[in-house]
Length: 341
Picture 1 (cartoon, helix red, strand yellow):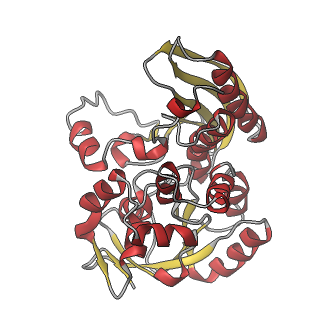
Picture 2 (picture 1 turned 60 degrees about the vertical axis):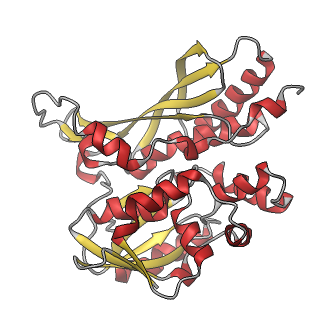
């Protein structure tokens, strides 16, 4: 397509506003009367909203959209959809419907838009959901994503900030996609590394979430734009601390090399500024620090569950084809909140 060079200027979850900025804005928004059926809202920094309809049924709502992060429109549509769908899985929900969110220049080839939406639709179908419509506006640049509705039993919702001391922490996908795509935009990343990152980003968290249902999971979040450490900070929620075993964290190896070459994202540095005071590194290389602050797009699930159950869940995750690993453990609240060693 002749317009490809204009298509990808850097996007995905690196395009998010910084967590610190968002927190200051959200604090000023009127909340209205408290609704006891709103089980999870934006005040908890969780992945999606959960609203109870009956004692046995709640709906889960989320939306996510962003600019292109890869040159191929079809692949971009797949990644954007997988990223939006992930929030339903992070809450323990089942995908039901999705609506397209489209910003597109009227002067650009409409075949590009068709390929974006085809990629997104295929991921909604794979998730078992129905693409029910959407909304589009003419814009100066391309943006795409989904508004997704799912269902969940209110008694089995996964929150992102309810770990328990002694829990093991499991991560289901490798880190480093933000750094690899940054390196790709300047022609430094290998084709193999980009292909591996794309495969990870287009993989739904559906199977990982389904496997979690067989265990006493205490908390779940998906690792996206605020980085592994940013989302981990939200999981600890000021009530717990944790130890992270850096050598056990799954990482795309090439991301470490590019981090050493300072091929980094501005969003990664915003993440460091936001959560850095809560983290202490003990003998961890600079490149690994940067990977832990790297914004992920369509990243894996970060799962907190009883330590004795973690090996069995890990075995099932790996047998399903996911490169999951036990990456740390939750402790009583102490300083630092997050110790990476």
